[in-house]
Image 1 (cartoon, rainbow, N blue to C red):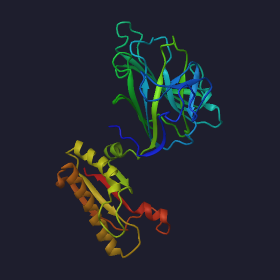
Image 2: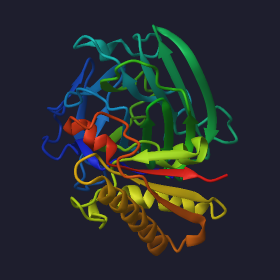
Image 3: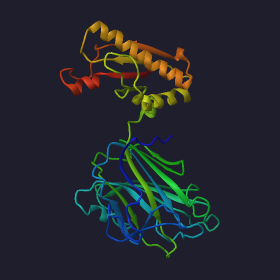
Image 4: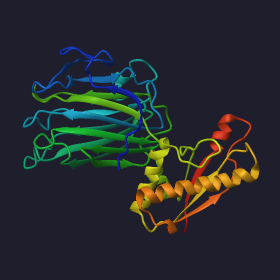
Length: 343
């Protein structure tokens, strides 16, 4: 169910960096170098021993974002006694706060995941990997768990994509399209503003981690889970031309998210309510809001082959404002579409 964010904040594939150099957009208290693997053109950052690494271009992390990157380890090598690959999100108040995160120490606020391409069981080495999660607040670990998973191992899955999805407090992590973690309260009420990777000791020169295609993007709110878990969802991301009831193409992402929920849960019945700001005639706004609700229903039924009897529509015009109509920001909040599960 991973949905990548559509507003890219940072993309790093190290293509602008010379082979053998440490990348210009990153910082470290250790070392590393940009390399290629097996004579291919893709550039990778090879992480060195005992160090922390952060990307300089990240200044603030939104409440809803996705992070994707590739991880590579050499096939047929690696030891359980070597370092995990640790990565996560921290609140950084000083330039070098990223360097406080290490195997036997930590900073104040951080949400970290770690992965290892093998396990301690001699009969499962190379078939299973290890994944762990750690949450720190005010310098203390407040949450932690670990599990074995075949999604990352040095035999069959030694080159994988890692995907992380933050939706306010919720953390989801995927390795190779497999969901590994789904924690509803991982992120605390602090301003996370840095992405950090860190390494402890490698067991030998072959046990190196390589990362590439780092993509950080702002994402929308938790549409799918909010509708199913709370029974309602309100959005002003479904857009129309002024005074018209034709859904703009830019609304397709949020329409698709709602459509997938309804398609996957065919017994659910929902209402769709259209709302407007106070500009214009009251009666016309009431009619327009109903026409817009119908337009959304029509789009959902058409794209996802839904049972139209399960969807009711209402036009409420300007009768239920959420904000003051005297400001542009208030008007924007009032121009909305509301979905509600009918019991």
